[in-house]
View (tube, rainbow, N blue to C red):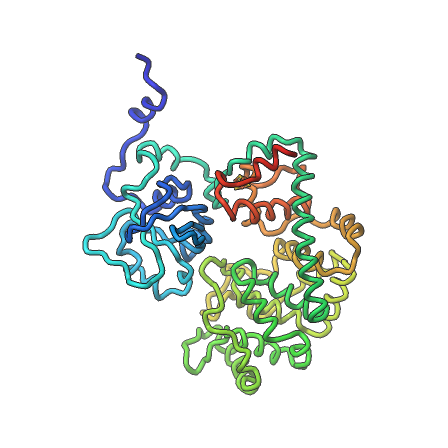
Length: 456
Ligand code: SF4
């Protein structure tokens, strides 16, 4: 009898893991591929249905970000996931005391240690995978060998990627740009509502702050921009005083008399602290809570400290008037030049108050972020009519948030970057919008996008 290919591979190429406990990297791969039973049983006996295993985080902080799942009471939950080999590793690594892990909702591990009892009321569901794999381990191992680009993107190709990639380039571009317009119109509606209620300059200030916050600290930066409105910051004549107020209200300025500060940072912290000390009383009601900021998955170059320095630079009255006019007039290249000129004597070389120096001096707003801000800030706020904006956008430089684009492209198109024919600004934004509307909302099996594509 002819041996099947599957049996041949199992027998000749794959072996069981030598030890009883899987390596953490293998567990991460299993989780990333969602090669687990669904629903999954928690240690408490609850059955949860996994929608999205989360974005694979290759930096500090939890292993997967923004996973989503359904509990038997019909509630959809989302949050981060931390994986370990042993159930006790959470405590051994002191994650409870680390604010980067405060959004963890699932603690997933290979085996439960004897005598392990999860902390009551922690709100984190505990899952042992040892007996909940979706296929024999020997068959799963072949998957662990593949696709470094998937690992880099933190995503895997979704169900509709063959359909999307098989479309003629002009059709694919048309669909993506349609989604891009949808994204832009949503942003323009929000911008117009903000202009109507708070005025053009404050709407611009909030949008710039949000854009500098990236996805991790978007809300935090918006809260800061509301707590310290642009008209109040412009009324402070001295740039160091302005900076002290922004860092003080943000709760990102350590008191150097109570907390250890590195020798490199000390002169600048002292200066800001002394300025903040005399202004603090009037700002006290507006100070943000200390746990406002997320540092876990943020690269050092994009730390909130550096982004805040950029916001402070833009609040210089001369720069501010220039940037407001540029946005209103829709002058993309002048806007980019403003953003590229942002610099700071301390933050160009540091990522935090701990004194560590960046490996090389780095722009506070890099090219990718500046290009992303074109779409996030200038396009929604400009006074240009839609037709004029559309024709100008065709000449905007391509680029933008490479990390998120890579994830969206891997999921929807099965490749880390969109094909050259569809690399327009609008198509790129459309890809991100579809990723947000569909891929982050539901698993492929429950998604209506393949049906939509058939109708197109
Ligand atoms: S979730 Fe929907 S849109 Fe995303 S890859 Fe799956 S089928 Fe496509």
